[in-house]
Length: 139
Image (cartoon, rainbow, N blue to C red; front, side, top):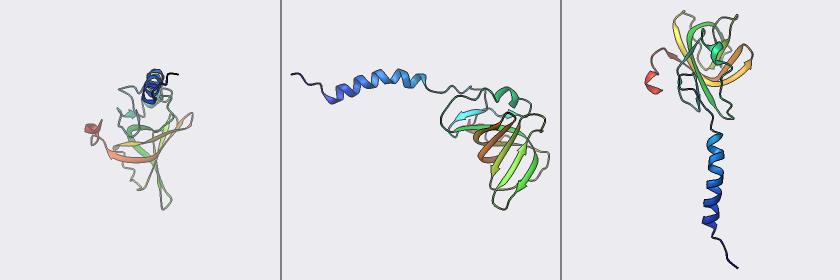
């Protein structure tokens, strides 16, 4: 009776499974605002987010999204700040963070964990706020 070595069996299984795993990798558009894990994409804007919201990769893991614009609402509960970007007539983005921000009309960037809250609402939690241009080297 001939026995097959354990490493040989593992090698064959790895070859059989690897094409399946490669095909399951999500496709994140290079010029898009979504990234797998903690990466920075090309920021969306309030004007372009409607074009991106239905193009989020199908991925069962953390997706980071970033967007630039002005804060239009700021709510503080003593522990968390809820910052809202973009007009209510379009797609709104809420950033849940630890520090309130002033509503100055100045363009900033939200970057955080993407969650689709409703047809017209995106929740980034956790989320960080950056001055525009400070993270361009991190992409």
